[in-house]
Image 1 (spheres, helix red, strand yellow):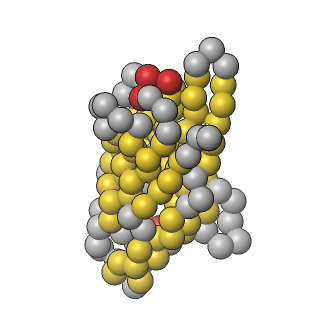
Image 2 (image 1 turned 90 degrees about the horizontal axis):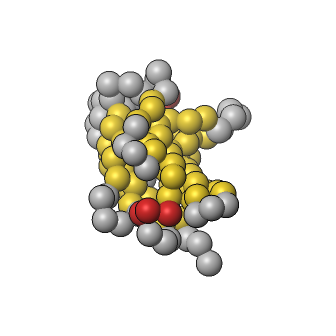
Length: 118
């Protein structure tokens, strides 16, 4: 049973910081991509940042310069450091994991709420 679990969300004032974590099952070598997505009320889910097995990162324009995605080198743990948070960053943040062990499997976490007050 694959598990993907986020943590670290909460309530923060504008300008503050949060660090999200995502723990996935399996080995780091079996994962080809890990990413963070978010969904605000009434809006579609959107990509925030991603990182590949090779370490290539990608960020949404809205978070560039404010967020940093990273992962543990030994375990399938993903992080998102968010700084200079804005009220428009308020959303449920989801972790996405893509496994590639010869065939592709993808999983979503349950999400963690991030609320930024003005």
